[in-house]
Every structure is written in C-alpha cells, then in structure tokens.
Amino acid sequence: MLRPDPFSLLLISLAGSVHAEQNLPTFAPVQIAEHVYDGGWEHYVGGGLAVFDCNGDQMPDLFAAGGANPAALFVNATPEPSGDLSFARQTPDPLALTGVTGAYPLDINGDGILDLAILRAGPDALMQGLGNCQFTPFADLGFTSAEQWTTGFSATWEKGNTLPTLAFGTYVDRSDPDGPFGTCDDTLLYRPADGSYPDAQALSPGFCALSVLFSDWNRNGQADLRLSNDRHYYVKGGQEQMWAMEPSPRLYTQEDGWRPYALWGMGIASRDITGDGFQDVYLTSMGDQKFQVQDPSAGGPVWTDVTYGYGTTAHRPYTGGDGRPSTGWHAAFGDVNNDGRDDIFVTKGNVEQMPDAALKDPNNLMLQQADGRFVEIGTEAGVASLHRGRGGALVDLNRDGFLDIAVVNRRAPMEVWQNAATTEGNWLLLRLDAPGPNTRGIGAFVEVEADGHILTREVTVGGGHAGGDIGDLHFGLGHATDVKVRVLWPDGSVGAWQPIPVNQRLTLTP
Image 1 (tube, helix red, strand yellow):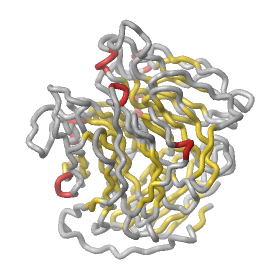
Image 2 (tube, rainbow, N blue to C red):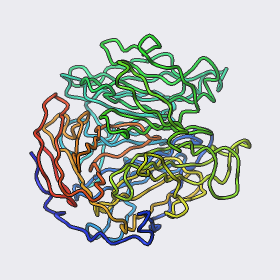
Image 3 (cartoon, rainbow, N blue to C red):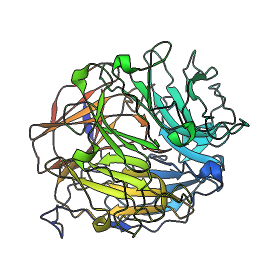
Image 4 (cartoon, rainbow, N blue to C red):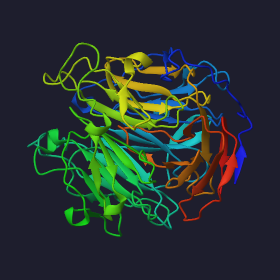
C-alpha cells in the first residue's frame, strides 16, 4: 500500500530553464560551516558522507568524515520543503570521532530509527540512533573491530536473520613490515547468529577494496558482494571481485562467467540504465572511469564495458587547464533535470600530489541524452570544483523533487550545491516503510511505469566511496503524468501496480 506524506503533498511549478532547449540544470553553492577532511597517508582515501534523517523531521541530514579532524554532523535546518538549503553543525560527542574515513546509515536493530556504521583507520564502530540526532555505541550486539584500515561497507538482510549481514572492505595492512605494496587486508564479513555478531569471517584474498556493495544482480532473491579494488597496492595478481553469498562464500570465477578485470577501483554506482530491469555499474578509477552494462542473457555475472560508446570515460579534466589523467572517487546515478533519464555525478581529485595525475581535477556531472550517450555539463551546472573531492551525495536535500549535491573534500572545505529547480520535468520521491527487522526494505526493487517505460531502483546500503544515503528514492519522470508503481519486497512478495499522481512524496508499505 502507499500513503501520502502529510508534509509534502506539494506540486511545484515547472518553470522553463534558461537553456530550455537542452533542459540544463544549474546549481547554487550553499553556505555551510567549514569542515575539512584531512590527515596523513591513512586519509588520502576515504572522506565519505552519510545522508539520512536522524531526527524524524523528514529532511536529510549530513554526517561527514573528518580524518584527522573530528567527524561532523550537519542537521538540516531548511525552513520548509523546497526552501533554501540550510544546515546547522550539531555533532553529538559519540560521533565526534577522529580517524573516521566514512559512514553508512541503516537501521541495524529494526527499531525504525536510523543507525550508523562508522569506518575508521582504527576500530570501526556501530552507533545506535536514539532519535533527535543522538547516538550511542551499540552495547548488546557483540560487534568487535580491530585496528584495520577500513574504506568500504555494505549491508544486507539474509533470509531468516533479524540483524543485517555486514561487510567491511579493508585497505592496506599497516602492520605488515613488508608493506605497503602487496599487503592488502582481507574483506571482513559479519554474519549474525542468535541476535549478535560473532567474530568476523575473513574473505581472502583481499585486494585493497575501496568500495563494496551487496546487490541482487540477477534478481534471484540473494544479494552477492561486489568489491572494487585498488591495483595501486595489490600490484599484481589481483582483480575486481564478486563473492557468491552461499553458506560458505565463494568467489565467482571465469567458469561462472566473471571476467577478470583490474583497475584503480575507488567507487561503485549501480543502477538499471538500459531499462531491462538489471543493474548496470559505473566504476571510478584513475584515468578512465568504467561504465559496464549487465548481460542477463549470459546466465552468469557478466558485464560488458560500454564506456567509450556511452561517452562516460571522464578520463581527463574538462576545465582547469590540467591535461593529465583524472582521478575518480564517489559516483552516483540520478536524474538531475527530471527528464526521465539517469545522469552520473563523480567526485574528482588528486590522491595528494601524484605527479602523473591532474591536480586541477573538476567533479563530473554527465547528462544523459535521448540517444543514451552522456555529455559533460559540470561547468554549465556550476559544480566544477577543483578541490580534491572524495565522498559525495546526489540527494534531494530539501524535498522539492530536484536532486542536490554535496561533496567532502580533502584539505579543503566541504561543499553543498542546491539544484535551482528550473528544469522541466515531473518527479516522485518514494520512501519504503516495512515492519522490522528490515524496516527500510533493503533488497527491495521499486518499479515505476511512466509512459510505457519501467524505471527500476534496487534499495541497497553500500557502494559509492566511503559513504552512502538512505531515505527517499528519487524518480525523474519527464513529461509523464500517467504513472504506476509497485514494490518487489525482500521477502519475495510483490505489490500490485498502483496508479499515483506525480510531483509528490509517498511512503510505500507492504
């Protein structure tokens, strides 16, 4: 069933863009208290951003990693839906940790209040949300963490469990005297038992995972674990990985259809772009970024690289005058102009002072065209920052139906841009609300039918670079007004198609 959000039965005027023939979005910078991701070698990577509603006011808040600086919570103080964005820095003591590389929101204990998995160069932490943006370490889950260097996270609910399965992607083993090259740590898998977490299972070999994502890629009801790995430190013998989440996890191999592939893996974005209902992926790296389309007819975990054909390489800066190869970090799909086609946002920035990579390396905003190709509009949109971008978010921060942007920078202040909401196009914001333990419907597929096309969203926790968001699913609809929605829930139940009006926020329940 669905129910309207009582605070946001809000129709917006679809004013024409100044570039109406191209429907180009524009963004305006938002003033926000200074916050910098900084520190030594351990914080060349990371810098993640968690976006979630921590006080129940239906507005997304921001939790930003700080590295050597304390992490910071920015509570959304926007006065009303569709208002000018405003954030107040209000970090409770339990969240003001140093050594934080990233964070992901999820409801771990099924009480309906969002919690945080916090990644660190040091022991990781699971923080219980208490409401009103207050947190405390979980006291009764049995979760323990050693002094690893954590750079990725994902979670899923496996069948029969009341707690989520957690995966922590770790980077270089800093304690190995032969390091750092060739000393990648293992991925750590926490499978719950009897309402708590036993010691982690090491998924070996590890190849320095910088992004991890549970995804039901073949839609068989079981999420498997994809890892994007950094070849800079595994040096040789490594590759991208996907673990089949069987009772004893196993790596997919060429016998299954998996294609060995190596890159400087930084981030994963997943979305059905081709319209076949299966998840395609965008993988960030140094030099070429990779866009890979899933081939469901292959019967195995097969993705085909289509980067050049779709115009998504983003391999060199498009402004700033630096022609050296570009370095990608966080990636996200989203429809920034509500034309019904998903676009791609990528944060960019030199690792530190790498001489073979661009120092002036702007973020990418690639707009999908009617023919499926993507074109760069970062300069025109106003988001071509030349800071060292790391984590980011492409989320509607003021619930006006238009996606906004936030980026955590290394050695420079965090940046937020508000979508000017001047492009033409209808939209939906859809939120899942399910009975516990999996209150946010992680693992569900939400399908929206608009003008004969089906737009699909898989509800996941993970991916990106060291951070993610949980909350409203945004759908750009173009000029479609005849719209239906259904949810394929994680327990296998399938909701009926229901007609819904456009330009509003709805909560969907089983």
